[in-house]
Image 1 (tube, rainbow, N blue to C red):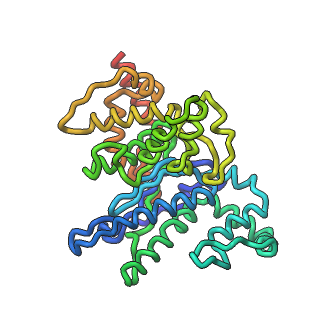
Image 2: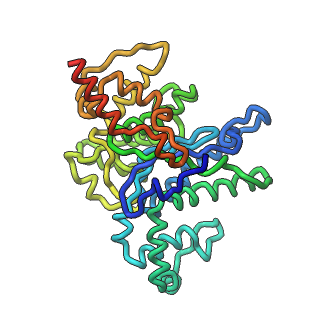
Image 3: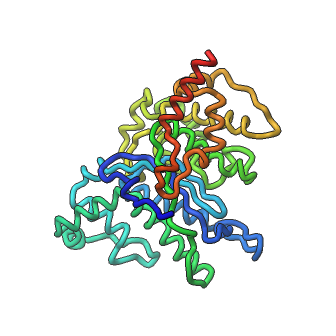
Length: 349
């Protein structure tokens, strides 16, 4: 069956959230320990994490979550063309130079562009318009993520050929329910693969970075200082904050160049999300039935979903919302799922 055009999924000029997956060629463990050659390629996970952090400060995209596995990659991103439209032509030129510098330092990092360099990039109105569009485009983001990693890995192995299996797969996330379930699914990937025993031991995941910043924030006495450290910490400061509208606004007013914006993504705090994630992980384990914590009830109610529906959604997320980089006919509607949750809520009440 022919693929659907990406234009049918990616809406230019609109804010959208996507779950993106890309696999290594033949699904081999080119970012972990290869069972056949017995070689360990785990150091490449750090390459991908650093590249994600770098691109978060260049593109007009919010990275909500990520997980780097041994043979595939998960990223949850939110496109922000509204922010790119606010950039000046000089700002667009500067960001484009950072991605594709014409001069580099000895360590291969982009050299500082001169005013003449930036003027040359922004001299064409049509050219700067196209660069502005690309800096808010998911496909260009994935190109700038995957292509350098593939080239670096090929140099590492002294080989040629494909590193990634095919084009990335993208799943549109239509509302907060889908976003929350997808983030939980991504953050729990190492646990489901038996590579970690808890979220804090899940290496190369967004949740581990958030937990480390939260632990560091406890050294501050005031709540405001703790929130600032949590949302602008060294580990996860390039990721989008969790809470959409926090009571303390000082953390959102702080300027940063590590990410596109300070906008959150869920109607819950970081602590509530971690509690929900921990509880969900316990329910999905076969050897533990788990107990529903009372403090989690408002979260599930706010998501307008029953416990059973939430667990089924997270456990079977890929099956429920499967789409081959955009096959809308296979995408089970999130809004329809929410309606089913409401019906189940009424029946159980």
